[in-house]
Amino acid sequence: MHFLQQVINGIAQGCIYGLIAIGFVLIYKATETVSFVQGELMMLGAFLGLVLITVLGIPYWLAVPATLLAMMAFGFLVERVAISPILGEPAFSIVMLTLGIGYVARGAVMMIPELGTELQVLPVPYRDQSVAIGGLIIGMERLVVPAVTAALCLMLYLMFRFTRIGVAMQAASQSQSAAYYMGIPVRRLNGLVWGMAAGVAAIAGLLLAPIVMIDSNMGFIGLKAFPAAVVGGMASLPGAVVGGVTIGVIESLAGYLLPEGFKDVAAYVVVLIMLMVRPNGLFGGEVRKKV
Amino acid sequence: MTGSTLKLSNVESAYGPVKAIRGVSLQVPPGMIVAVLGSNGAGKSTILKTISGMVVPSRGKIEYGAHDITGIDPAAIVRYGISHVPEGRDVFPLLSVRDNLLMGAYTRKNRTEVPRDLEAVFDYLPILKERCAQPAQLLSGGQQQMLAIARAMMASPSLILLDEPSLGLSPKLTIEIFEIIVRVNRERGTTILLVEQNANLALNVADHGYVLENGRIVADDSCERLRAKEDIKEFYLGMRETGIRGERRWKKKKTWR
Image 1 (cartoon, each protein chain N blue to C red):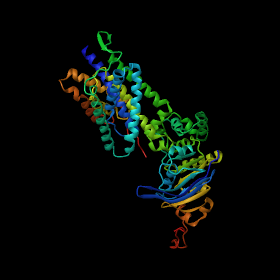
Image 2 (cartoon, chains in turn cyan, orange; image 1 turned 90 degrees about the horizontal axis):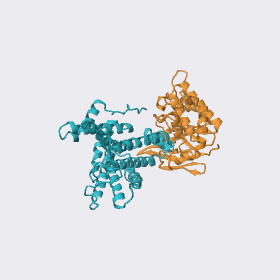
Image 3 (cartoon, each protein chain N blue to C red; image 1 turned 45 degrees about the horizontal axis):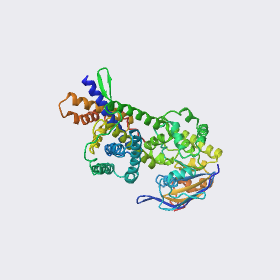
């Protein structure tokens, strides 16, 4: 029974990793750079939600879309103002830049008196509710996570498959030069992709907040979402979610079955094994660039 | 569909310190097929890339009809009616043939015309209709070239820039592709600016030709007259005039040098 409980906890945690990993993958596919700011975007999303609900007193169901929209706009702006000008520079500079933006974000939140320095609780309507399924008692906050993740994945799938802008994003990622020739506004799409990545991260933050406390360091979870993206193949959206859930479950079971300490390194052990066995990741196809 | 005249005046483009084209002036009147000939690295592709806004010229002026299109955004140039078929096809490998074609129509304002245009394009290239749902990477080289041309046609252009359509294709397929190009030109009135290494084929198809060497235009005439020129014959068509004893005259040089 405990074992199952751990698996369910692992799935919920893994979905959070998966959502942040979706951000990594989106940005990697669009601009072939790795953004390490995803964890901080999640933290910012959680904090923004907190401020809207507790400080401004906006009802939860209004605060969620407001947070989402604000974070998407923020992601778009970050790309336009900071990332876009240095695209084309060595990948290392861009990685350092995203890390830097992350530090600035964390520092800025910590400067907010009281709110930024103490642990905060996000009041959500489904707090303290639970469902009993055959002897198992599962907290509502852990059930909501996989449900929202699944819905979000479905929405992303439909968008990339059937909308003009979604197909154009795929096209730009497959051949940027051809996309320019077709008159697809590649730069604006890159900004939109960042906006989407920030939006998904903000949702992850709002989902994670009821499970853990909100604090300015919660963004470090991004460092565990990166392995999730790698396990999934770095360029595959379903891979990111599957990788996230895999790492979440293994981590949770490692904490339950193995001695203290294994839990924290479990994600990285999984990545190491993955890179040895299947360097392209679970869903990574063979490299198909040909001349 | 009546196009406008494309006019390049004294255009210079460089990749960093390397000048690729040095003061090129040329004219492409509406409804014509104009060919730019030249060997590897002469700057042919750079001319096309400069016209379509991928390379910003360091000097000179590019006009399309009344519009000055020098150095403006590639998307705006597509909207003016200039479509580029890039060298080496450059189709979107994982998108279906259909989605590839729809991406060609990305800048179209009137979305209701797109399905009709799709049918019109399939009329020229029926093989693409059969392969509609397949990812473009599964097509053969010739089919990918056809897809690249069809994708450019989907923008409903008045001028198509064609970069080496014969690249990597068998002679038979090359002729097939050129027949399609001529048909598009004759039936739809689409102006075509063609860049080719296969000078023989290009001179047979085009109305007017420019010869490019080291980034400069060294000859410019109707294709008929270009075909008759001794030096063109020798250097581009591979026809050699030899003396009685089989040796070449030392005096034979390119007339433009």
